[in-house]
Image 1 (spheres, one colour):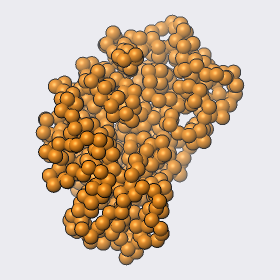
Image 2: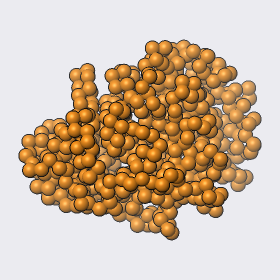
Image 3: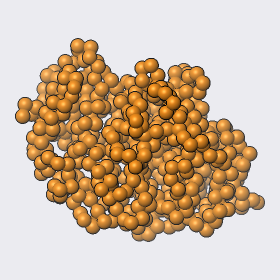
Image 4: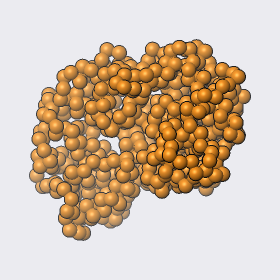
Length: 574
């Protein structure tokens, strides 16, 4: 660190391929019959070799060329993670087109809106259900589909099976002359605080990240990834996916997509991943099973597991401790879609600290503004927001710096996150409250909670909504593996009492007494991505949660009747 306001990543960023086509061809030559990808098929994993992958991509590119896709044109993709999506997306990007993956779980109106906004020349869908969400136009050059569809009103549909039958003259993936600075991927942000924006990312953005990662860990073709993170989101669709592809490791699809923990465990048993990328909520679910079943504990912490990576939200301390006790390195990172996404990574040799997300990766510089907003500069910073010059000018400022909207501070062990700027609110006495600080304190040591939400703008004191980790009630956990002092509640009533004690302790610890929580409610409810209460990376979406549970919040502030839903008002006077 050169001074209090600037921190430059070391060592120097090594060289990397100029574009995706060059990288993929180099790897296909090098790894040939080794697998690039595998997905479940009739109880086992079916592998896709690098050589077959290259042949498939060449065939897809031939169809794209025949259908008139030009460089720089956009192709919207609506599909859950699958082999066909991986090959089609990389065919588009390598060729010089721009892939625009969109969450397949969105309702029809939102999916159609996002597709129209990116102005695609083609659309890719997995099946009838995804196609049915769109008001398709005959102006599209093609509608590519993976599974059979029942109608083709536009007359321009092409099936994946048809694409695989196309013969090609060359076995080289096209696009080796594409500029490193050309946009190849557009991703919609999670939109935790508002409407998603469409981020434009280049070949250099993506490949510079992986060159920086090579400095930190030595991944190779012997490594195995078990991947549930969605590819329409930057954590899974850029950071994890390309970590595997760039290094020749095998990317294994977790076909439960993180929604079925029992299926994830079954897939874990088959793959035995050496590296695992996840958000804290899934680690929490896995550790719930680990606490309850010795066999699962041995399965999860198998001998080949080299490290785990966590991002999107702070990893609870009790979970971090379980990895540390077994000498499994835990890397935590920080970044945004606009930074492709990683900016900093923790050193697993240092004791993890709540909120500390490490030092800048190679090639990246971190600075703090006078207001302590985190600024980022480097080859990972986006080109701008698509068709949104006003928002682009707000965040891309002088000398290539990107304004993240996050507040932070430098510490001896790394950058510490404070809060999103727009989440901080003022009480009626004009004092400022950082809600994430309180939320993190509540969930960091409690395996019985999945999320917390603090509200109180314009009120005398903050209040808090608490959402349980219901799976902790399925079996009795081993008290010896839970945070000291935990009463291991057996149900919601007991948890409500337990949380009353925890909230009192938390209030006693808060230095700023105006931040003390005055009311709390435990809800028998699980937040979901489908209801947009969680982002695709399973971060809490404050605006949505605040709107959905407005009546609950107002009741805690003494402004309405007690909600009729199944809730538990927590006694704060214990």
